[in-house]
Image (cartoon, rainbow, N blue to C red):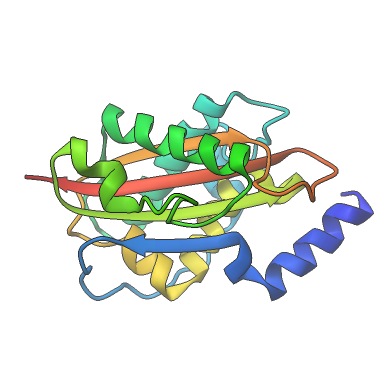
Length: 193
């Protein structure tokens, strides 16, 4: 690990709210207790879990995010969420938009929020988690570990209310702060009408 990556890792631990965000369009049910998950055991079951954007395509990294979320749900006895290509497209476009326009928020600079993005998907409930990272923090495993370590994010990712998932990854961070590989990740969860 390079020195700047170690510094970012330390910084991410102190300012996690800057790099991880959650949004819920419809309130979720009570959360489940946190479980600490070793990355390597998860990576063995989810291809590309520990890959950076230099090592895998954005689509491959999005697949790893979906796999890791379902792995977390399975470990707690929850039903898996099924891939929804429409949510994959929405999540991918949103991740790319954040990277291109240099913001990290559930609301775009022109005021569009989660409900605006998923309206066309015909959902009765929806939620969204975001992450970005540099170097070793640019992997799907790092994003999911951060979400599970945060009560609000964990509650959303593990909510039994949701039955479908979409994931999108953009290569690069929403700010020019990384000297190594970076990614911006979006996971959207929903329940069809």
